[in-house]
Length: 358
Image (cartoon, rainbow, N blue to C red):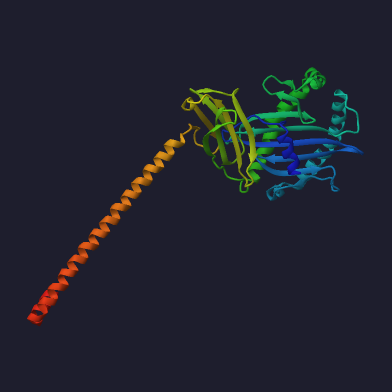
C-alpha cells in the first residue's frame, strides 16, 4: 500500500507546491485501477497527516473496511470508523465510474491497465488557521485536472481533460464545494487529528545543507545544493544569482524519503566557471528560525585552512616536545651534579652528607 502511493508521487503527478512556514497538512490519496481479466477496478484510499499514514482502504480486502495505520487514531469515537468506511465504499463505486468515463474521453478501450487518481487536502499554519487547499486529478500517470483555488477555474493537463474542464466550469457548484470543503471541513479534521496525535507526531528536524561544485563529462559546470535529515517533508531550495531567483535554470529533484523517517532533496544550477560566488542557495523549512543562505566554498580554501591548522598543531606539538626534553635534560643535569657532590662529600663525615641531602 505505502509503496503504491509513493509510486504515484514518483510518476511526477499529484505533486504539491512547496511550503515551509510551520504548516501541517491533511492529504487524501484516491486511486482506481483497471486490470486485465478483472471486471471491477481496484480502489485504494490513503489518508496522511503531515507525512504519517493514518488510514487506508483497499477494495481488494475481505473486510471492505477502513483500517488504522497509527495507534493514536484509535482515540476517535466508534461512529468515526463507520463514517470513514461508508465514505470509502461510496468512493469505490464513484471512482470506478469515473475511470470508465475518463477512459472514454481518451478513446481507450476496456481491458487495459488504466489508473485514475486524486490528491486532495489542506494545510494549516502552526496556529491552526487555514493556509491553503488543493485538489488535483491524474489519469494514467499524467496530470488531468487541478483546481485553481484563487479563480475557481480548472486547469487541464492535456486535451483529453477538456471535456471535464468544460463540464465542471459550467457548473460552479463543483469548484465551490471543494473551496468550502478545503477551508472548513478539511481544516476541522486536520485540527482534530493534530490534537489526538500530538504526542506521537514527529517533532521538527531542521535540514543539514551542503553546497558542492561539479563538472560534467562534457565540461559543464554546475552547483548543487543538497538538504537532508529534515522533517516534515515540506522544504524550499532556491538558487539565487546576484540575489535574483533562477527558477527556470534550476534542476530540482523532488523531496524523497531518506529511510530513517526524515527526507532529502537537492537543487542544481548550471553556471559559467568563475562565477560561483554570484550564486547563493536559499533554504526555507519549518525547522529553521529563518532562511539559510549558502554559497559554495572552494575546496582549496578548505584544504588550505585544514593544512594551516595541521601545521600549527604540529608546531605546537614540536614546541611542547622540545620543552619537555629541555626540562628533562636540566633535571638530569642537576641530578648528576648532586650525585657527584654527594659522593665526594660523603668522606667528610655524616653531618656534611646530611646537610647536602637536606
